[in-house]
Amino acid sequence: MFSIGRDSDMPEGAEQKDPDAPKGERRRSVLHEGITINGDWTSDGIVEFGGTIIGDLTVDTLIVARSGRIEGNVRARNVTLEGHLEGTVAAINVVIRPSAEVKAEIACQSITIDAGARIEGKVMCKAQAPTSQPRESAST
Image (cartoon, rainbow, N blue to C red; front, top):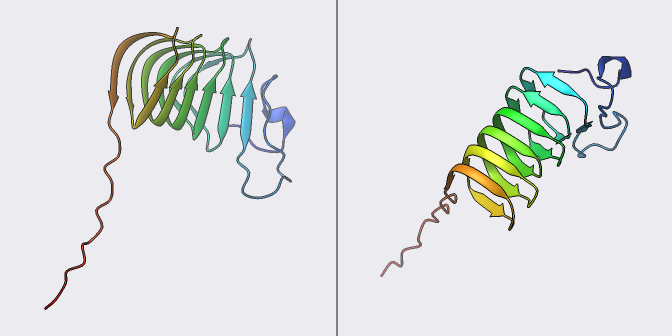
């Protein structure tokens, strides 16, 4: 993973959140078209991806741009797909835009699929069970 705050450690086209930004704001990485990664990548922030990755991604929030291409497995809380993904997705929330081409097994709690999206594979969407509240009993 890349160090924060040292521009020389980052690939061309990648941007990180300003380390002096107010606390509570999540780090954002932007990888533009033309960047290729062979290997796995982990981030605790938001990743906007427009390049190509052959490997697995574990991130908090992933946005795959129209030019983005992922061949691997994705684990994230939130995933928005506009580009190409081939592999698996394990997420809480998944949004698949009309420009997306997806060949994957998707496991999530909620999913939105826009008209025009091309999907081949399996979707398993199971909402999280509500937490049970203890019932108050009336005593006589």
